[in-house]
Length: 227
Ligand code: HEM
Image 1: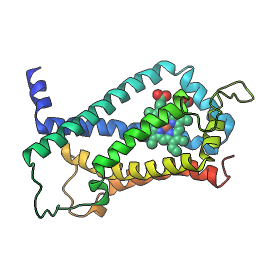
Image 2: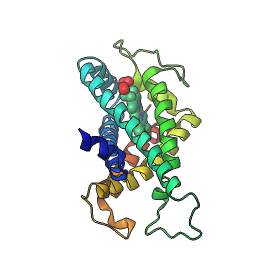
Image 3: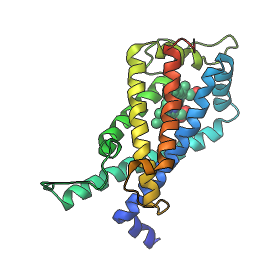
């Protein structure tokens, strides 16, 4: 037990927690993205999928929620602590600093992460709780009397600022995943150092797949393919 506390207190321990919780997040967003693409099959399929999650799979959903909430909280807490540690170790920034490989993704990890946190809170209040209901349809039901989540997705993304905010958040999610997927594998010792961002093929594939899969939904609504 002592070694666990010591690991938690060490910088590498905190980085390992960031890496593992980040990978849990990636697994969730990937599954969520695949589930969302069912919107292209139609209202019946999409509403049935939501009804399945909230009906027969409700207990499993709560287990997934608990794991996810713990992962997000730990991820944010470790980011906060590591940032404070880095600042305390070097209160005055280098006059000249050349990172070994600096990418837009690596430079936007902190602020992009804050934006994603704001997005996640907004998103849960929007589609899960209905406290934010820009289209005013959260309580509508479909022809079978089920919660019409399909109608909510379509009506919401027809509002320019809603789709604009989602598209922006998805771009930051893609960047966050590109750097995060690679650096978590580096922390865990799975990936070799790469001096060129384009050598990070797995990270690039994950980031592009997740970004594109999520982005297609609002784009599908804007283009009138999902209606
Ligand atoms: C176009 C993009 C997205 C769409 C259309 C979408 C759609 C939805 C919908 C419809 C729900 C409610 C499901 C239900 O209650 O039946 C939901 C829940 C949720 N989404 Fe998304 N989502 C998107 C992107 C994201 C992203 C990028 C994340 C995380 C970074 C995310 C995290 C969540 C979480 C945590 C929940 C709550 C799950 C729960 O506890 O029930 N979503 N999403």
